[in-house]
Length: 636
Image (cartoon, rainbow, N blue to C red; front, top):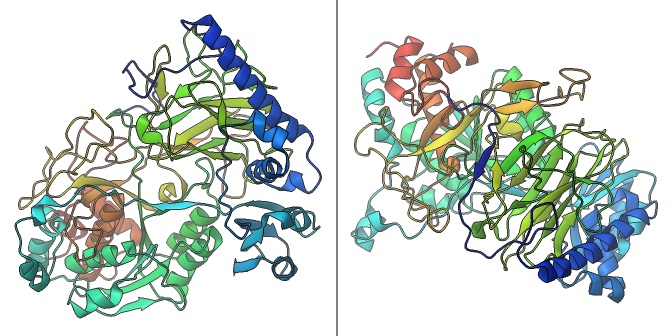
């Protein structure tokens, strides 16, 4: 069994260039170190001077918006931050996509009056808009605006590989004529279970939340999909939803299908979860989406929507994620108690976190070459919307220059959250966490789909526990991935070992392997959904509660007819397999409760890896026939 929050220190050399420390770890060239320290000091001083000089309107804005605005207006500031990129996308028209936390409907009209375009408005008045950068202060300065942040980013958990060599021998005519069937149908034994138990998903409605269903009509005309009930105006953009629907239809061919996008905004995602249950009458819901600002330590708005629908009897499945795991050494995640460093980072007001639990001090965690362009998030154990402890995040390059940062102020009414992005080119990047003011807290640092690695004198520190957000909701099924057929077709990072292959045309067995990119648990929480502490007075590693996530494992690396998903890898493909198997169970026993379905799936799963629950595959890979038998469905 993998223990929770086990810290791993790796000594693997990194080929992306040597990192230079400005901490207690010595470097070989003092003159080079001095130059790097000077660059670090100039950059961080400039950024922290901005933080100290914010106007009332700027205090309600993301630090990245403020820095982007000031860099454009102040050439002397730009000279102090020559390699800095805020990560804020500014259009040719000078607009930025923002989320505005507002009270009432008047803000949407104010955005339009300021030359902005409103993209969506939630029932509580929150606005997603494209707003002129020059109008930020005016909008943020309004009394009915609580904060303005760059639009929350999201990802699906599809894992793009190289060309599908399994398709190489097929002629174009054969591909066009043949209906594509997921190899997971055989690997999970769903084909045999349908024949043995006479189940097909009939009488069950399964609904998908993803990016979009652009090729829905094409899949329907090819015989890959039946009619799909799409929530009005919620078709989205993209095709991952189409691919997920095809998987469900392959395993549960008589299930009714539905869809809504999760990508309009985070508030819209939560609203669509509820609408699929109430308006769509969905009995099973599955998604493959994560918003980067979903708290690991508390159920926030999307997780709360999942809680609502599961409390009403809906079965909910969600991708565990593709951010790697500590077992395979692919993790880009670190969590633990803040440990005050005995050494300083040049120019920093505040206290750096010491990543090294030994007597050696290390103020940075180094990033792999595969982390280029990846977002880096920082959370700490304060209640959502009520953080009074101020933590900051910095990314530096090999020469000591600050290339990205997030320094939002937390004074009692803000979120305990920072986000910055690794540049898309360059090498030798490293991250630092700084407590600007306040109390020590438990922290979570995540380079999403990236990796912490050793470099030079820097050791790599990573932990298990990256699965978070609504996928880790108490009654959701968080789904890990195992290949059904061919191996994932590229190394996750240069020098990685080969990826595992699946059993197709055979069945999953106890010797089957999971995907090396599949995200791990467990998930530690410190707060109830309403922000009350689970263990009042203790929000450290000895407090809170843990959830055993992920719950189960299902197939990925399977065939669909959808361009770009041939084959379809990632926990994005695993989650709809699990949802489809649940549909078979529910069609076999329509009176089954969610608890009975869960017990049947978990008790009959095939244990993978370390005996018992483990943090990568959960309770194991689920199988259709044994689960139906465990539920008490009689063979026909």
